[in-house]
Amino acid sequence: MTKIRFHHSDGRTDTLDVADGTSIMRAAVSNGIDGIIGECGGQAMCATCHVLVHDDYLTQLPPIGEDEDEMLDCTATQRDPSRSRLGCQIIATDGLGEIAVDLPEEQV
Amino acid sequence: MSHIVVVGAGHAGVQLADSLRTEGFSGQVTVIDAAAGLPYQRPPLSKDYLKSTDDADLLPLRARKFYHDKDIDLIEGDPVVSIDRHGHTVTLASGSELHYSALVLATGARHRRLDVPGVDLDGVCRLRDAADAARVRSELDRARSVVVIGAGFIGLELAAAALDRGLDVTVVELGSRVMGRAVSTHISDHIRAAHTARGVRFVFDRTVTALEGDGPRLHSVVTDDGARYRADLVVVGVGVLPEDSLAAEAGILTDDGIVVDEYLRTNDDSVWAIGDCVRFPCLHSGSHTRLESVQNAVDQARTLAATLTGKPAVYERLPWFWSHQGPTKIQIAGIARGEGPVTVVGDVDRGKFSILRYEQDTLVCVESINHPVAHTSARALLAVPGTIDLDTLQTLQFDLKSAAANLRKANA
Image (cartoon, rainbow over all chains, first blue to last red; front, top):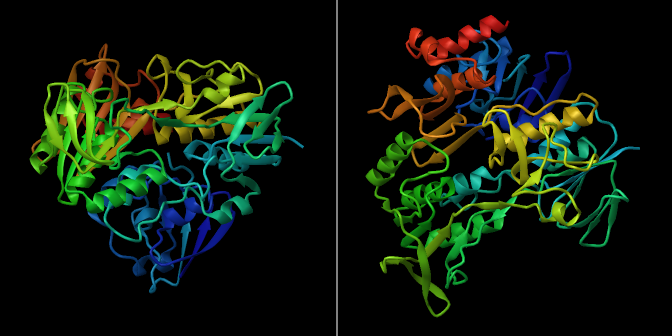
């Protein structure tokens, strides 16, 4: 299980406890958390699940894949060189106890 | 207290309920599903769901907890059977009656039946809902030869899934090319070649005249030239028809779909409609159009939610679409009205390219094959019709990503 904290651009916070194998995108969409869209259903093809990972957690994540990297250049809100990731590529696992992300102002 | 009743729990209906709450609607929201079970996503039914894995579940649209947390009443397995527009009520199959302040019809579309002898034989399937997908999946487990009728998106996704399982696959198509309704000839040619290279057999310009069986069990498919194709499984993918009969019976205007205006409102002030069931004035196609896509369902739901919460919004969103067929990912942004001039960008040999389609020198549609960056850029460029033309693209050497970045800067 991973605890995911979503920090909305208006200051609100939502927290979810997510089962292993679920992506940040899937967790947000299933639970009606606005600010993440995930149009392509998790295929790293739409850049609408853009999240900015809090510094404390960056090193715990697997490196950015080639497809993800290409799509991060297409985000509606400007990419942050170190913190931007696609929510569909961050998966809850045994090793990831918790993670906090900022949701960008815009996804489309 | 106001009560918005939503008929249908597909992509449109569920998104509408979600968006109503996001937009601050605090009245009662009821979503009525004709089927039982947690509402689920449709696109995976012709893709991931068909892979031979025992634990591939339906992908829910929202977790069950979502409906509870957002105070959305979900009625399952009890379809609406009639609408009383004067009394502002709907009656359900169980006899329940619900009073509405606003009624939203999100009834979707149904499978178009192939009317030939033998269509009711065991082994003849369609692919529209979860029950269909479960049946197709178990037939795929047992089949050796599959005949797909129809080379549209469903047919081709099915063909790819069957091929991935090592089955013998034939696709019979009425027209002369694949996805004839939806893509340029350039894309049709490329996709046909991609499928053929993997082993799919295509039969074009033919109609199926009969399905033949051995007792109750399918055995062969017969076409109008007398040819016979061995088949353990047939999947019929010849299109859908909008579910507009409930509306029509209630005196709501329909015309191969529920007719709505640019605000998605029907001829009844209290009744609205969204998604596959709707015929609406489409800014991008320049005509009254019916679109069968998740994007259209979801975007219409979002737009209508704004209108229903006091912020009237005209629906003008760019149509876009995707299809995954084996290793090939097709993404389409915009609508073209005919075969016009095109530019090809990207790397055709490596199968990562896009077709830029123009009308009167204005970019109107971009079809991408394994080219997501071009697709994403295209959507930004096509959002407002007439934004970019051939000359401008030429000066940018057809770099869509730069063009989109320039646009973003200009709009900032």
